[in-house]
Image 1 (cartoon, rainbow, N blue to C red):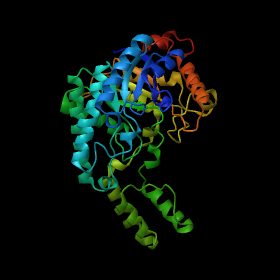
Image 2 (cartoon, rainbow, N blue to C red):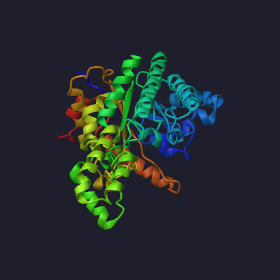
Image 3 (tube, rainbow, N blue to C red):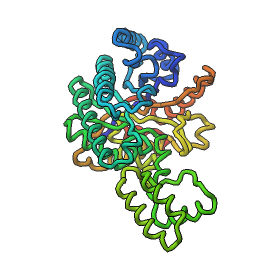
Length: 399
């Protein structure tokens, strides 16, 4: 059984627009006891915005600062710029090609140049795609093909663990456990190159809004709608199901059953729009897929949103994410037999604090919440590179 090495890292997006040069954020994180960084494209290293010549200088700055501080860029990650677009699933093939070949691959070149891994999220399915099962399947297959090409490119450039981040709504796949497994298998089957997930401990906040309703639930919603009018957040999936529902609320009760059956048929034609209860459980994700996640983004959450909260005493009091359960869930993932058709299980995992800072937030407050978060996780990972079994065995706090 693989016994992965565990490292604590920080995504430097928390420092963007404030500490922006490699020497600045490396020295800062070193002073806080962190020696591994996830360099976010949002913190002045985005190839689309900065250009090739600047990125070459950035690479040299990283190498120099790393030699001076002992801090290493473990991974490079995409940021909000490409996250805000349809990207690799754009309706225009020229845009898809540009994101794939003029953004992700140059970013992979940079990662290879500094000896880092790479992760990204830069695609979304438009509503037109979601409403058309045939188009959805075509778009999904095209995305897998592009991810497979990226996986092979990374392998050929010495990047061992490229991956895509899991999300939590139907228009941003993979967003369910089953869908994530399908992506891993399809990309690996096509490329025969390792390709992985980034699990995020706050990205289970949306799935339970999209559970599949049954007839009884639909009937209850009809009655409530007739009494109260419009219902917030009532999920039926495709527009065709909502159209039938809107017709049904004006029908007599003896006509309802046939209409409900039609609604369920429309729901069944669009299975990709629905999650199951366990898809909203962070620890279930870690137990089933943690061994295929070389990067785990750590954020505190109450389970209602992905707000990228810190691990301060106040946030932890109301939060769901804690060190011991996270590590135990990862242990369970490694104890589970390897799944056929999947890439090899990861030998290293970077538990990476992904804390956000507000535009008007004061620097001293950012520093305080980041240091508190680091201190919290250092209780569990006192030394970087410890094996998971060693951490679980030797850390007296894990009882």
